[in-house]
Length: 409
Image 1 (tube, rainbow, N blue to C red):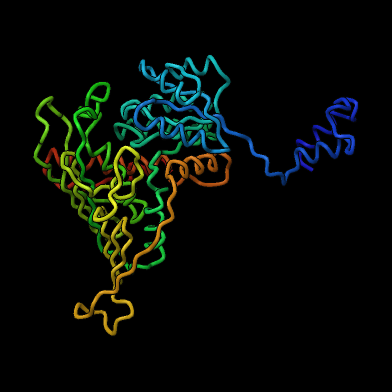
Image 2 (tube, rainbow, N blue to C red; image 1 turned 180 degrees about the vertical axis):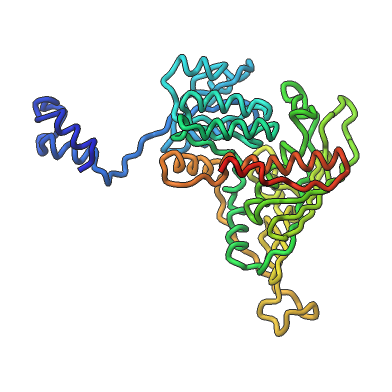
């Protein structure tokens, strides 16, 4: 018998205390309570969730919340004038600030923060201070110092029961999950190297107000906005990056002037000994990017073929992603360049990463899982991005100081 059942039995006493119309005639109150609150019951508490930010990503998270049977969307929060219309389309309440929301409705269980990068820390901190679990979009912060301060705040004793996750949703993409399964199973042998691409063309309206923060050096640029995703995926697959070198691409957007970087060619070294190269650029028409290759973003058309963005090289085989083609000498007489390569293609079951990430967030809140991307992991990706920016500014190869994060374990 659970504590809740025992308490209700003692409190209710007998059938009369509830009234005959409330309890089925075929059962007494004791059996009724036991059936209602059986510890093995599949009944779940629905988590009340708010979305902070009505821009490109917020509504996508909101749709996941609406479609998940374990969550309820109770509010959309954003100070911009068009946010009220977005909330109306989502059939939820609208508030201009977190404070206004907390004063108007019962405290939500969880929040998803989808605001501009430089506001992630103050908004997340305000929510945690109010006793709300937080999933904050990547990057976790606009600086290492601010990110560390948020991690330290989330780990205070008074916040011990709260969860802070970082929204690197691509860890839940089916193509990434299949790739990790193959890498971890040793299908490629010992991993030697990774070659990656994130190249596409962003139109001018992407950088127009209120999105002009995306071209500012302090808050925007292709490195913290886009490359951070791929850095996290590579950490997920191969472990932490410890050394980077970067060369800047030629600028393509003089008017209005863009302070932030548009692209870079990188060389990478991982703690495991894996090495890599990566080209990132948001000023070239190209199918070689995660969005066009997987079709995960409905705003970017999916390319049906020829849009690989990762090539992973191992001692036994190589793999291209997302076409999931494995090349090896399996079934050949010799492992030799004189032999024709064996080609295998692997199927991937389609799923929506935002939906899977939300389900994981619910499981973490309910104590059923450990965070896939904790605040520390989110900060680790940001650490690499800032090293890339430093390499671009100085022309130097940057060694990453991973000990910065050790004090937060």
